[in-house]
Length: 246
Ligand SMILES: [Zn+2]
View 1: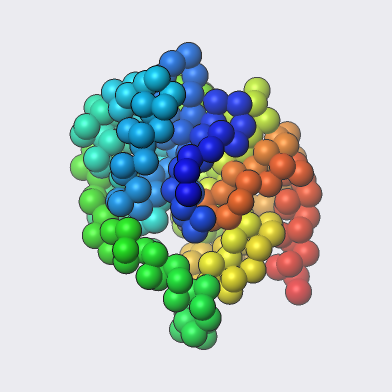
View 2 (view 1 turned 135 degrees about the vertical axis):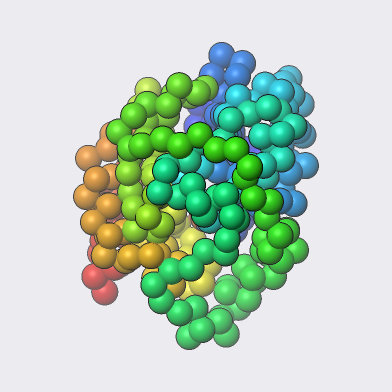
């Protein structure tokens, strides 16, 4: 899939299964999440189309440390001399590039075509050999990061211990990360929902994190997995809660 602008100065990269984003402010750039290793070539191509290049990236901000979100982070860090930022509680995940593990089992759903498609996609795109990140800057929740776009960090744990969502208040954009998704690749369902239980360290905590996201003022919600949502955070949270209660 080609990169597309999904909000003012915000471009979507990746594939129909795994997203990451490029944010521009005054000619400087921040990458929000870092997809899978084989997506790398998309980045210089997009930057050239924007009249910029890799060295205009100052920062990579990770919503969490799972392997499908850190794929090109180390390469961007070294090639663009960008700093990689992550919540302290997920730093170890990113440092070791360990495979993610949640509270449940994927086995009951592995027969599904959607699950098989995702696993094949991960393998094809280097998801099983993600480079560990050698140098990380850690942040805590509640702060506004001094990087292009100036995202505000909203702690939203549950998918992982240090998972955060990122808000661009002036643009009305929330990067939900994996606090929510609109494509449950394990079960093949679409629309706002929590990530599959098998990939959350705590479903309960992930549900509780929706309370923190609910009052956020943003029309556009962008996810690690699935299509953008333009109906506002409140409505996305309501749908996810309703689905979780079923
Ligand atoms: Zn993910």
